[in-house]
Image (tube, rainbow, N blue to C red):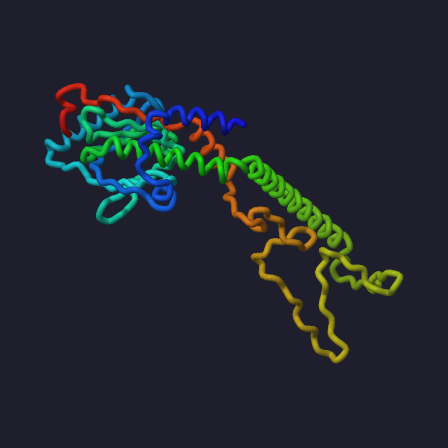
Length: 310
């Protein structure tokens, strides 16, 4: 199966790091690992991977920070919360989430082997779909943070295979079924509308001219009963004791009914699990992100005197 081949490729990417995983799977699956760092910022890059790509981004953000520092601005401190659900960047005091980077959108992660404080990762933005490079300055924890992100990605990919990946085809079929049901409901509404229009035309055709009184008795069937019409409203008549009949019981207007008086079938509310309407696109997005894999690298970012310290 294609997932196995993808996972084998991913494992080879992690071969240098697997022996150095430092956290238990439970710590990243049920909780998160927190780190404090300074956030140099993020900038758009042209590619999802590449050492030269992040080098250019680090140079650019460090230069911007030097300018802001000369103006008296300090580098903002942030808290990183890493788990199998992503990398959250929060304000350390208010705990407000500034950025939430899902793991299947992170494609490249690297730390500086000369300056142990600098690390960076590339993440595809969920709204603009642009690749953004995030750069941080930590207290000599750059490599540890990089490895933690790599371990979280590895665990998240395995979890995707165990839970979501195995029944992707089933969920795709459910998505197709939901789409077909919506088409049938639309067709049902159109037919109902046409039926009502025909009924109105028949009623207009049998209306007597103004001022004339029709004495024609109402037609009955062989049992002397008035034929039932599903569209023509029933006119209440007085009861034998002269009292009007009780008003008919009506259903709340917010309950949708089809032509036969039944509620439309919705597989996403009758099953054991609830799936969002756009589940197809989300599954494809996650599958594509994990298929690309995460590349971890240790490289050198400090290439000139400007990069010495930010």
